[in-house]
Image 1 (tube, one colour):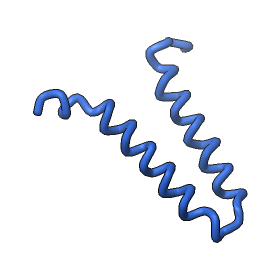
Image 2 (cartoon, one colour):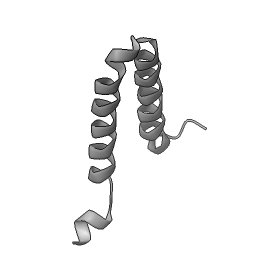
Image 3 (cartoon, one colour):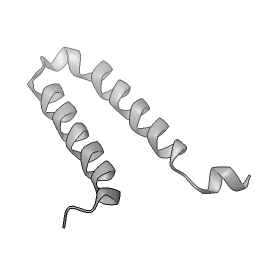
Image 4 (spheres, rainbow, N blue to C red):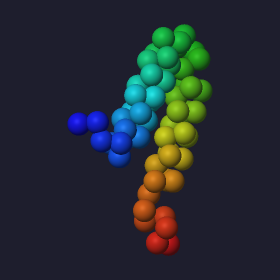
Length: 56
């Protein structure tokens, strides 16, 4: 099942997993900033894909 409409979420998921793996390999004192950046990026992506934002 290689439907093109499903590839974007999978790509995002794979990118997120890769980012998490990279963060986990960083020294503990450097992780917080990376987690914040990742959370901000994911929040922004979610807000852009939220159909209810277009209705308001």
